[in-house]
Image (cartoon, rainbow, N blue to C red):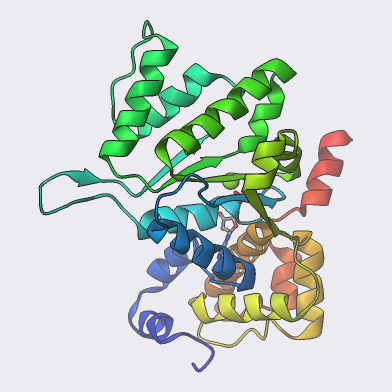
Length: 293
Ligand SMILES: Nc1ncnc2c1ncn2[C@@H]1O[C@H](COP(=O)(O)OP(=O)(O)OP(=O)(O)O)[C@@H](O)[C@H]1O
Ligand SMILES: [Mg+2]
């Protein structure tokens, strides 16, 4: 079983078929090129010395193409801990932007992830101060705001106000801010000249039929608990998976999950073109068509 990573190989040799099926459903992590580059940028933020112009990052990509997966991995890498003075340190705080640019809900989102109480009657200024003090006390280095394109769901004046809050927090606390969202997020940040200057954009493009995609499929293959090699990088398999997935990593992961389960149930022990043709999967394009008709 040379096609498997050492850990997967041991698992395949020892686990029951039921456990192997279950493991197909677990999210995998593959450090593909752009994800690794973004991760090292994020790592730098953790040790970046405080100054009045901290680096900020904007991760842009289509839905289902790996933005949150990177942020989640980063957050898990820097879990909160208790230091020698018995104070809690929380280096990375992750929140989602509220569904519209609402300052109050944004502070609440931060307070909630920090398990701090939220009071409906509390004034905005006081909420802001509490958020600021908490992030200072927890020695937070990076504040992540996912789904930042939600800001566009509000009137321009509200949008500006919300972006000013982000600027204010970043300046006041001298922390790094990481925003992520769809292409619309790009417009959000570009709408404010100061933010546009301060946020370095990083794009997660859709996958194409190139060496990067082959590397990704090769990495997936080392993690799928199948006894036989599927040869996912064989050109017709690559084409098939690419057209089914519409170039989105989330769809690729789903296709491989369903196919490996089928490969295990059927006893085939490898993903074949027949299996790919027969799994219960609609490509994103077909899903859209089905919705329209
Ligand atoms: N690095 C990775 N390795 C393996 N699988 C991945 C990776 N990144 C993403 N995936 C797969 O793609 C799925 C979708 O990724 P993710 O949730 O990060 O997308 P997203 O860009 O945040 O989408 P949305 O804009 O809809 O929130 C994940 O659930 C996972 O199955
Ligand atoms: Mg996401």
